[in-house]
Image 1 (spheres, rainbow, N blue to C red):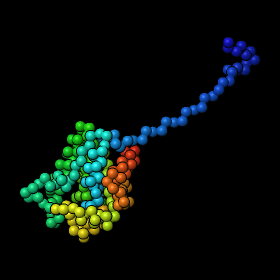
Image 2: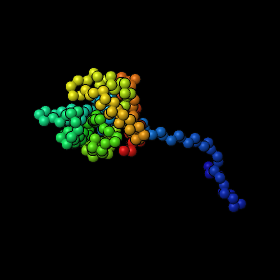
Image 3: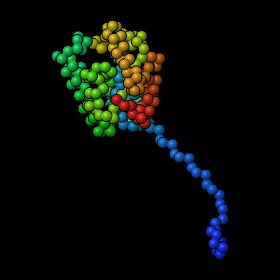
Image 4: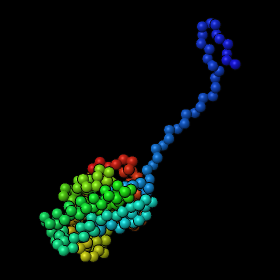
Length: 219
């Protein structure tokens, strides 16, 4: 029964009852990069392991994923191939730009059909022609760049195992590696895979991408 009315002018309060403990706010879901459609750009010098890591990462995802290597696309040109190792000139630059546009077109096509992609290229922090701007323009602002940068001794050792026009001279490798150090302080995530094998590097890449999805790097 409700309490009798109070004729003294005071407000009658209802009987007390237990107060419920407020529930804790629900923690935001941690993004799972292995089940998300992504576009990743793996950056690094020759011998960093970009292609090996990119292939392994693409092979072991839970969603369809493509691997696009700029070097592979550039070498689609057979007769008249402008090898940048013989000197960077108007022809090699034009073929590089063409290959990058082709990679970007392919990446957008894959993404539009729900297929993730990982691209790899030796992008330089101090050279706009082979810089991030072109990739952002051709793939889109959602592209997630990650730098793979092991120590110089590791890069030299891995480069020595390469063959054909993919193998560079030691001085060229050292020069490129030195310029890649400019990525430190850029705000982009950097993985030093000097002591990591390919599967371990791929797992670290997933950890880096989890953070990048939650807080995309500014570039």
